[in-house]
Amino acid sequence: MRRAGEQVAGVGWQPLRIERLSGARVGTPNGGPEVETSRIDEELNQWLRTAHAMEEQAEKMLEAQSSRIENYPELAAGVNRHLAETRRQKERLEQCLDRRGTSASSIKDVAAKFTAVMQGVGGSMASDEVVKGAMASYTFEHFEISAYRTLIAAAELAGDGETARVCTEICREEEAMANQLAGLLPQVATTYLQRSAREMEEAKR
Image (cartoon, rainbow, N blue to C red):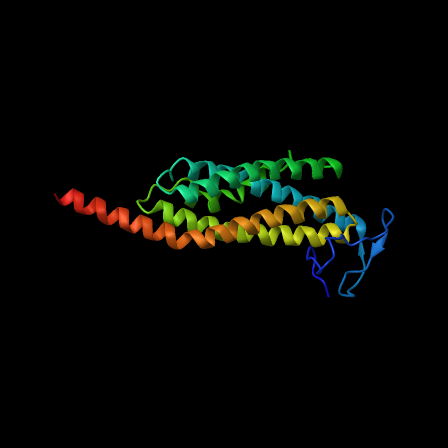
């Protein structure tokens, strides 16, 4: 069985098509009990608002990282590229919310939930902050991936193919960033340790 958002060989991405009326009930994909579509829409809207808050905090994290990694050019290039992607992602989520008749303006409380996660990346002044920042970014990318895979499934069940498509595209961008970070982590650690050892030797002279 094809998972939500997954491509089938030789076939482009196709959203799950569900014909529904307001207040109708739909069955879950695994044959579970029917759920009122109004409830599905309510949850989907909330998860979209949460995703928007997530991207707002990711933008702050990436901005903070970008200003302090000039000695790591490959990491800096990836962070700056993803910062631009994150800003576009936030705008696209706003468009999804607007199209669904809701707003991102009511997410201040939701955004606060991500502050603690980001403080360790954006506010750290530890000497090895570049290493810890790269590790935290890698972890957070996977959190974002899980959020968007969840959104894809919810949007498909709600019959909202456009939101499913947008979330699928954003998810692929997050997966690409996670893969890039996975490849860069050893390099970042090695560069940091070499620079640290050099600076220590120079300080002894």
